[in-house]
Length: 385
Image (cartoon, rainbow, N blue to C red; front, side, top):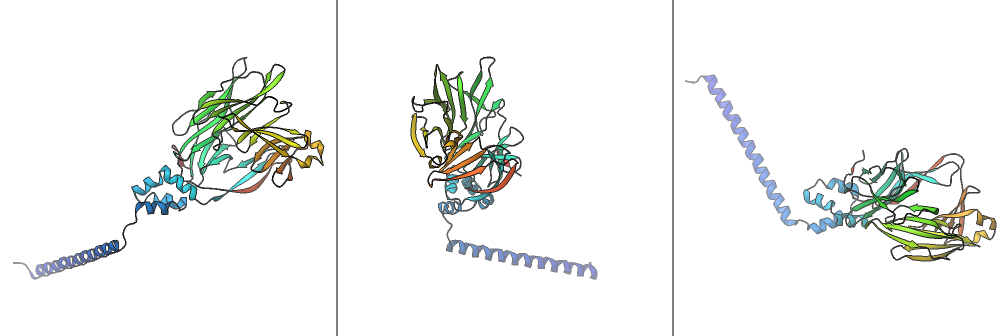
């Protein structure tokens, strides 16, 4: 027969069991009530159609969308979709980026520094192409997602890398000019291309014509707007000269050869070869005008003639033999004066000229630009930090 003490312990245990059961029942009742309440709310506010969710997300900043990748698989799949990335890129608000412009002493060029030990080459679709200041390393960086892809070494003698991007497929290819010594016969010249995410190494595309009797040669890396790289060569042709442009379409990797019309310029030894915005241009200063031929469609061998009046030469005719056109960007013509060591920036619309003097010491200044961010992620990209 149980003792009084045992009876008290049994009574206490029974009380605790009943208490726990009552608490469990209360929690269960509260959970059911909450579930009913949620169901009522769900019935009152129907779930948004996914196309409406897509529309809302396409207006949000990149930082928010990167976090929303973790919401569910469906959202993650959407944020990686090429069509959504393209739509978001159109609607995204530009972000302000800061760089440093570094002037080299006694030189008519400057470098745009982008981050530590890298200089900015070009940018498209929220991606920046950068080149190391201390090595041959090039990389593509998404400044909004903080992801970066380092390109393999092109090896040999190569020029600055350029790249192109297809926003409909998120495909990307890089290209650079390449040359190597071929014994005593001269150089073998061409371009190297790299399909990002597909090629482990660069592939060489030789120029169709290996011209040996070169007088002048200029090589232009690929721009996304034109999608081509060019080798512009002035060649000795007996007692005369001719100018040929060997262009490679980066996407198809097919070459096209365009010849400058004979007689376009009186003396090809005097002409300057440069970029008119994204296109190859050939020009010479005649009296008080800059006469230009722009290769605006290399596939159709189409040249466009442009005459730029240089009114400032009227007051200073001696400048004509000192300056050479170097680049046109938008409405601004940049001319280099190697004699006086300065740069002339001529606003072709307003007819206003600005003189930039070259410094004798290295100097830097902070500059700002606005670029649209994107969600583009290339295969092989890793977090920058």
